[in-house]
Amino acid sequence: MEIIWGVLVCLGLFINLRGIEGRKARILEETVVLEYSAISCRAHTASVTDFGGVGDGQTLNTKAFQAAVDSLSKYGSDGGGQLFVPAGKWLTGSFNLTSHFTLYLHKDAVLLASQDIKGWPVVDPLPSYGHGRDTAGGRYISLLFGTNLTDVIVTGDNGTIDGQGALWWQQFHGKKLKYTRPYLIEIMHSDNIQISNLTFLNSPSWNVHPVYSSNILIQGITILAPVKSPNTDGINPDSCTNTRIEDTYIVSGDDCVAVKSGWDEYGISYGMPTKQLIIRRLTCISPYSAAIALGSEMSGGIQDVRAEDIVAINTESGVRIKTGIGRGGYVKDIYVKGMTLQTMKWVFWMTGNYGSHADNKWDPKALPVVQGINYRDVVAVNVSMAARLEGISGDPFTGICMSNVTIGLAKKAKKVPWTCTDVEGLTSAVVPQPCGSFVDQGPEKIGMCEFPAKKLSIDTLEFKQCSYRMG
Image (tube, rainbow, N blue to C red; front, side):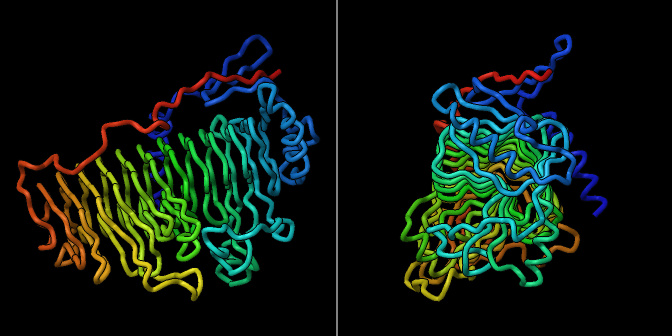
């Protein structure tokens, strides 16, 4: 564990150096001006202290935060509002965000999630899931929550949002929860969202969950949780369109990025896919999960995912596709290039027998389609097994392409580096030699696996230089 945290510190410094420019402080006489890049700047600004907030780590500030947001919401049609959170420890329960709004955390500001479970409101299950993930009932609302919003920014100078999740993990393991654990951020049915330049710690469950939303930028964030903490997924784009995730560093107890779109018959009925997703410059440590997972809740479909420049260390798998009979939906047009992996159980993992159904009403005839999966330019070392690829009998995973892949096996690696059932595809310049389900095209086809050259609209987003004047 000391080795992992040593790597964490070094890589965290590296990520901060290579992250986006946009957090500066200038001192003008007695006034400090904070400058940052954002999709929108605001004409009106307030501090949470203006509404009675106290950053002593003990005073509950839920009412202060909500009063501040509500007050700033009146400027939605007049240039928008920005809420500044100064240095301090700000204990709070859940509060709702608003449109044309920025929440900005000072570098020494820490939002501390309340540990009074009875004080957390409960909301309905997501319609594409049918019921909660931990229990069959509703869900505790997320710490930061918003629905039916536009133009929302949650950012800072690497301020911290601490979920204080240990209590929730104990309740989960002890089967004492009445409802599903809260997330740190959930924004749903919304458009034009930016989440950037923050550190997320110890979430009760998932960290960042945009759902049923579009035009989302998640950039320059750090997510940290113990590697054995339950279901602490990093970033979960869920039934979202046009999303860009970049320059992120994640250590978690579950998948670093988990792409989702609904669960069994509920996701099929809701029918909202995740599509047009960019994941780039992700660094992940997750010994029991994947750097990037597609599924298992993928019943609304997943299409056009573009992942590049991925680093994973001491992580179970690089990219994992999780599905099963009853899921329906599809995972197709997936493009991955430039993965650097060290100390992995598997490089590639596809699972067609994933269980965990929403309830007993799932349709055994609802078979998922998995096709058009492209991997290229992959280097991995100290790997136990190159790949575990398991499709579905009568419903094979097809169109899998792997090129320019070099996998160095560990000293105690499995004797058979590849296992393949009900999968089909092509390879070029892949070491060690894949199983017979894949047709080798020879080294001259080393660049054959696709990666789209045409940019998505989220990649053409223009930033503005915003500021906040203190003093």
